[in-house]
Image 1: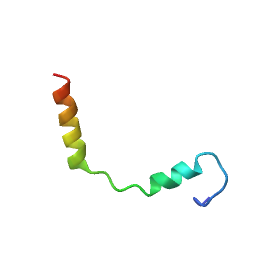
Image 2: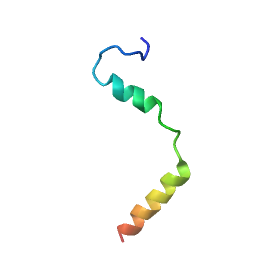
Image 3: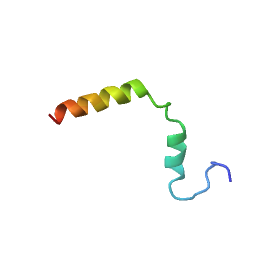
Image 4: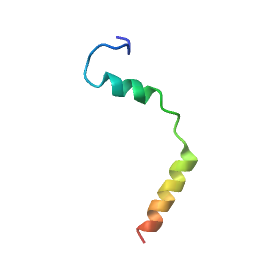
Length: 40
């Protein structure tokens, strides 16, 4: 089954997720470091 509009629940969310940019590992590491610094 393709990801065309099928009327199924959550199709719109699945289509939005498919258009997200790739994971930014540098930003993820910076956010993790920031979160860790707040937990001190």
